[in-house]
Length: 305
Image (cartoon, rainbow, N blue to C red; front, side):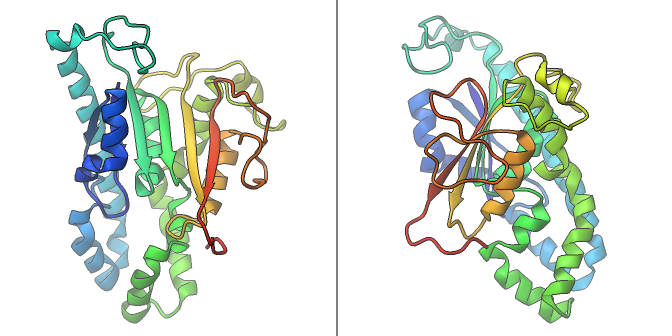
């Protein structure tokens, strides 16, 4: 499979070379590709500093840059998939049983499926990208959350930036929270929070438990109705299966954000879970083909931010 990787907070595409990506990729024989989240990458730190220090109104350019980064990622994924289908040597590879795609020993099919794996910011932004692209049928979101304004304001990584904002632009933390609440309207189209409804439709089509009664689309979701993506493709029948990996005690991405995503998607945990999550069912194993939330716990965990 082709696995698109989404990097973390103010990182870049080189993060895909790290062991947490490279090791499973080598074991599973994945082709890993990555691109920068423009607007929220390492190269954008200086620009963001000027925006917050000089003119917060210029923040509107950040979501536009992120939207462009989605287009970049879409083109990269499709280009790599097209190129691989033209490599005769790769088409002749036969995979051993249990290795994943083509594990029955048959030749690698074409075109190769595209999966998504994002961690931290890569999950917060990349979750929305996965549903928008129309190409992704499987996604793993590590320490996800939504909306971005909620997650960022509770992150331990944001503390020094908040101090700087209070010194330069804002008079209190309350003003900063109001600012994030307002700019969230601009942020929504280019992060998971703005795509929760569309993503829930795609997850439901893949066999996730039905959402609570009362939704105006319960009947359509229960029958696996298709969802059209911006790129023009449809989730017909198969839908999107997603694994949410949250971390209790995580100081960078609060589990409040992961809980929001889990409830919106209608996924479940697996009994026995580390803790009860409000609004998320906890059925007994074995798992079916639906999506799930899995939580780990840090030692000496602190109250969640």
